[in-house]
Length: 513
Image: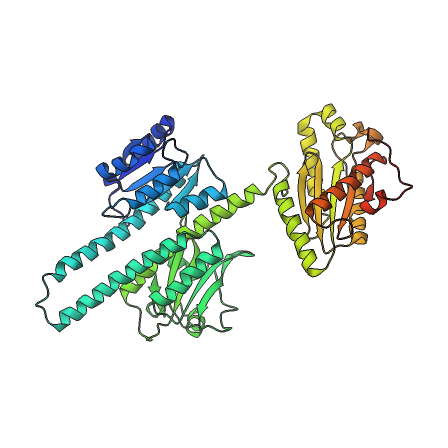
């Protein structure tokens, strides 16, 4: 067992949630892990429960009657406690703003209902580990303050030693201050840059860098962020996951100095020495290394003492938690912009990007084309074969659309059986050619039981609008493309119509039937 974690059978957990069933379920699960559980159904009674029972951790919902969860978090942070009290939010609310608001209010972690208890248990243990470390620091501070009253008679050597001990406590306090700042960020680049910049100052290092998993190769670690005097030397530095150095980090699970492993890792020494890397610290998530924090030489060119390595380990633990929170935030954000059935972007994302792309086209004085397309006689197909069959058609059509456009084009489900395609930097001629290719591709595709459709095949109609020819803003572009689509449907379906075409005096479509 990690020596920094107190025995779990001495841990008290306060659960603040107004759902008795959830309280009962959590109490049962936590007691199996030898935790003492303090239930609290009313948020207004939580502060009193904390002051009386002195729990080591709080699990709480943010959707509570009377005193809401965010207000309660702020109130808890105002309570004068002898040690830090971690707060994990456990709630059914999973919007990105909910996560941000909870972290800004003072929560340490956030997990959405429903969840696996194993994940919650891992987070609880991680929070208790961090709490134990901080409590240890506070305890050391108190011990030093008490000792200072008794050692005034000691000589200059003892005084200098005491100064060094105070510096250690001060540095550890700074680590926690920085870590909590880092954990308040939801954007990965910002939180990493904050951590690296502060690491330079705390460890008085000439350089610091973070190796992370290469997005194109999960088995390789590459330098994604760095600070300090490194020049171009870091560009080609990478480490394979099966390298002995990585396996060593997985085994010891703590920082170490490069000088201590010169003979064990001779293959890595030349590049480590070239980059003047003096210490390495692993970042873990679920027992897997996700990154390596590398410290360059100290400004004084002296070796890093053991207490610095200890602080480096605390910082990497905090950074791992912050990165995990950031990844959760990005996943929730992505879900809010995705159509669940087709996997395409949803209407919300479509309008946001169309507005952005039109603004970009305006700045660059370029064109932008918008396609809005609709499945012909889709109601007939749905009524005859049922909604599951109709849903399968929409999924297949989504796949056809994604395979027909460029990487920078944006395909979205507009609503129902309608789809939209944003074509940045594309004029009418290019848009019309693409639209016709899509129309033909759909017509030739064999959809299930499409012979029940008029004409024996399933087809689509497409309307095209171009900025700035047909529109000055997002709303105009949508209206123009939609009108062109209506014209295509009224003119017989299974065709592509440009907005310019519908204003021609000889074009009078029949009503849609």
